[in-house]
Amino acid sequence: MPIIHLRLLTKGCGGPRGAYFPGDLAISSLGRFQWAPRWACVRKARSVRLDKRGGALAAALAISAAALTACGSDENHRGASSAAISGSAGTVDCGGKSQLTAEGSTAQQNAMALFNQVWGQDCPGKSVAYNPTGSGAGREQFIAGHVDFAGADSPLVADQIGPAAQRCDGNPAWDLPLVFGPIALAYNLPDVPGLVLSSDALAKIFSGKITAWNDPILAALNPGTALPDTQITPIYRTDSSGTTDNVQKFLTVSAPQSWAKGVGTEFQGGVGEGAAKSSGVIQAVRAIPGALGYVEKGFADQAGIPYAQISTGGGVVPLNNDTAGNAVKAAKFVADSNDLVLDLNSMYSTKEPGAYPLVLATYEIVCSKGYPPDAASAIKSFLTAAADNGQTGLSAAGYVPLPDKVKTRLVAAINAMQ
Image 1 (cartoon, rainbow, N blue to C red):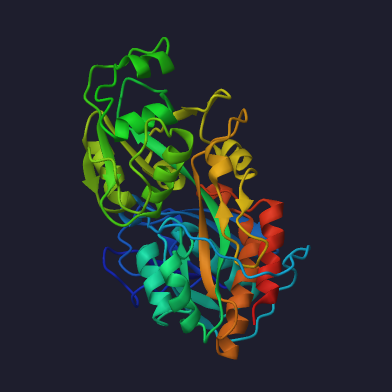
Image 2: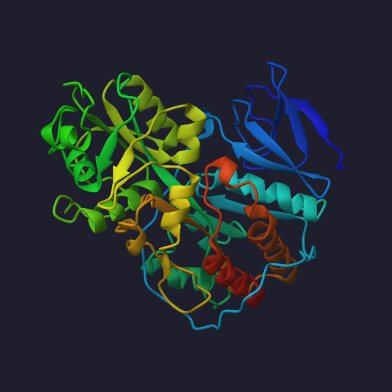
């Protein structure tokens, strides 16, 4: 059994900025055992589901609403050729330096904590100091050489590919998907326990064409439900957000007649109330009757906020682990390369029964080569642990584990890093 260090959570910001260390099992003021990674400014205890794996602990984290955020980016096109190979990640090589630094996506914050825990089990003494500042900041810090790798909800944009290669000593940077995250459409209608939306209705709400919950379009989607005449208040992200980017890409693909606002990390709808980070969206939805916002499923579950089902044309689909997993199977790769950028348009437009289409992919951005040897070995070790045993427990934290076709390509890319 591993040694378990106990400490009490406080409201302070213990530890260095962005750093946390696997192996701490905290006891909350209510006497509950809770996993407590030591990153900066964690203000509430995080709940944890503990599973036994090979005599060790595997944590599936659910971050408190005070720590919930998401991040942003745009799309691009590239592809350096490389042949994919099959196989599992295999045994983790524990070489290289003990501490890595990373920054970026807060949507993957829970997953990163789980991956870090698993890596520490596979390679005692190893850990990643992950600073969840958002995808844009993560990409900038990676390009500047301030962190070993970045987390982002979308790949490097076109004008970042060259600078990223310079940071990598003239070698390409790769975008490696490690996890998928379903996006929930959270709402505040206490007398409506079940709500159905379509992409077309959502586009009209977020562009101000539908303004009341009893609108005939919404009534037709919810037969037998008494929708109130309450004003709809769309809640959007004010920060540069990958969640915003993915929602707008979903609307562009699945409701082109009703959404001509475009895509990007800034909200283009022009209506509603803005809130910073996922925590701000949750707080706004809770506070405003009739509010509707978008936030990652794991965070909505932690906050206890209801979220809508989506009518896709193939039926009404609830958001759960199975339906999100069904949709992820439709994701495709942009190119046959180790830069594993995903084309999610087929997922956004799916009409497959039982497939929930509003899901984002979140990446780790790494150098294909050009790292110092001790950093390269450690990064490959961490990614191997994340791609293999790290996928266990993701569902409990609100994520979708990698499907086999993505995992196979990911393993090939990790093995090809130098």
